[in-house]
Length: 149
Image 1 (tube, rainbow, N blue to C red):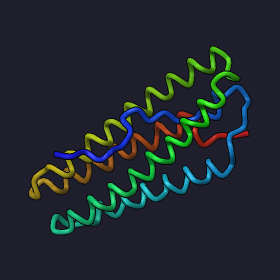
Image 2 (cartoon, rainbow, N blue to C red; image 1 turned 90 degrees about the horizontal axis):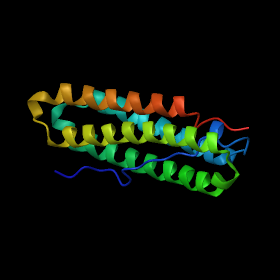
Image 3 (tube, rainbow, N blue to C red; image 1 turned 120 degrees about the vertical axis):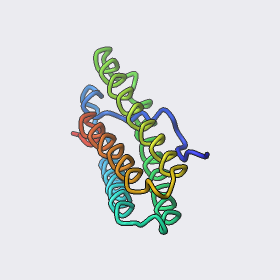
Image 4 (spheres, rainbow, N blue to C red; image 1 turned 180 degrees about the horizontal axis):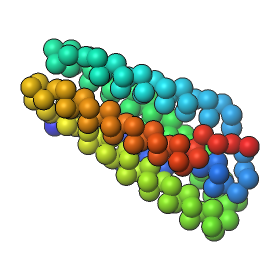
């Protein structure tokens, strides 16, 4: 079984934890666009039948790859601002990153289950994947990743 996610550790630049350093607006917009694309792919997957499984998996792979790329960009922004962050902000960012990492791993695991599961369980597999995405999306909201000054 091949699980599609390029980065197991998916840290994100946390605007709220950067001690006032503003994040680039275009980066926020890009991440939100990718997040919307993943949400749309998850919604589309819910409509696919077991016979459309390969297309559903391809859509999910593409969306998750774009999500990983966008989150990696945010990680790079955080690294650039790390020295400017207070120790408390660094700790908070670390905690938020750990939560995002956990949720991204769960999403990757569900992608693997979606790929490997039996056609007879397709409905349950789709529900599990959608649930993992909902948790990832909630973790993005709770992290403050979309917040910038």
